[in-house]
Image (tube, rainbow, N blue to C red; front, side, top):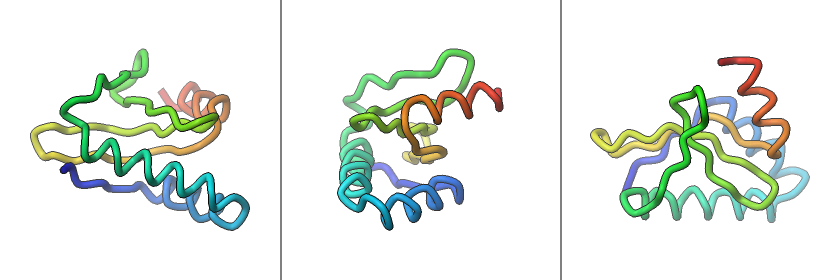
Length: 92
């Protein structure tokens, strides 16, 4: 199983979401846990022009880095589809 690391930005998003929609946070955390357990078998979707990958969870996207050598997944961004991709475009 891969080790999961959250950036401060991702942690803040989860905290904010937890106060409004805990069921969404539960689904996101379940999806990240699933990824950590199945990372070697998943077809990772690299974002065009970025080193990051995207994981879909309903209308939310989880943007992460995957390092097979260190067996680490770094969750960088979490947010609704349009918000996350807009933020990525503004920070190439």
